[in-house]
Structure formats: structure tokens, C-alpha cells
Amino acid sequence: MGELLSLTTEDLSHSEEFPLEKNLIESLIRNEKKSFSLEKRYRHKDGRDLWVNVTVSKTENLFGRTLFFSVFCEDINSRKEMEREMKKREEQLTHSRKMEALGQLAGGVAQDFNNMLAGIT
Image (cartoon, rainbow, N blue to C red; front, side, top):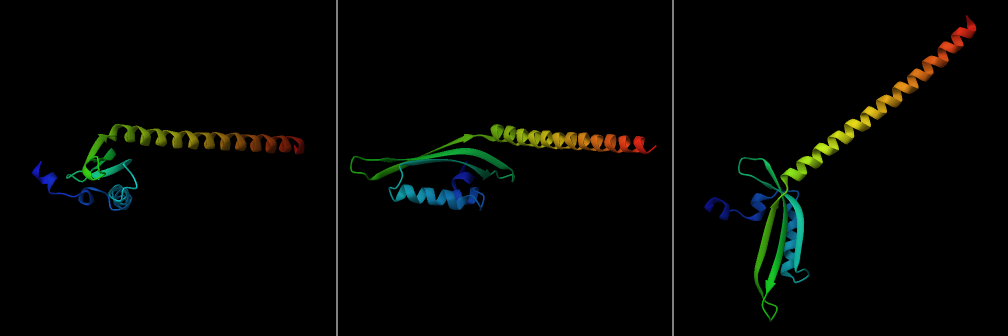
């Protein structure tokens, strides 16, 4: 646990995703937002991606001064894996349909060609 506490959000985030999160955090600090939520990847210490839905909200006192930030992370790895699998299957289905259409086209061309050859014979 101590190892995790010594890391920053930037240390845990993917470099291409951190600028968006940084902008959202800065908008909280500038009082432009009270909270935000986003799906992002964190890097596990073993190198794999960990997908989470992060919700950050700010709690203020009666005078509008920020007291603390609450951060909730929901593990959405299973959902992301299902989305990847669904996309893969959709791509396979699209490919199968294209191949079926190509087969029908080739069959039609072959039949027309045979009909012309029959007339010539």
C-alpha cells in the first residue's frame, strides 16, 4: 500500500490519457466543475492495463473553500473485455457477410458465363 501512496496520478496513467484527466482536475480546482467522471486505463505494476471508471468530486465548506476531493474508481475490466469481444465478433460477422456476397457474385458470373458457353456450343 505504501508503494501506491508514493505514486502520482501521472505515474499510474497512460501518457496519452493523462492530459485530459489533468485538465479535468484543473477545472475542479478553478471551480469550473464540481465533479467529473471518465473511463480510463491505469497501469498495474505488472505492466497490464486496468480499466476503471473514475469519478472525482469536490467537497466545499459553507464559504466555498475546498475541503477535500473524493475519488471513486470502479473496475470495468470485465465490461471492456466484453466490448472488445463483441467488436471482434462483429468484425468477423461483417467479413463473413462480405465473403458470402462475393461468393454469390462469383456464382452468378459463373452461371452467366456457362449460359453464354451453352449458347455458343
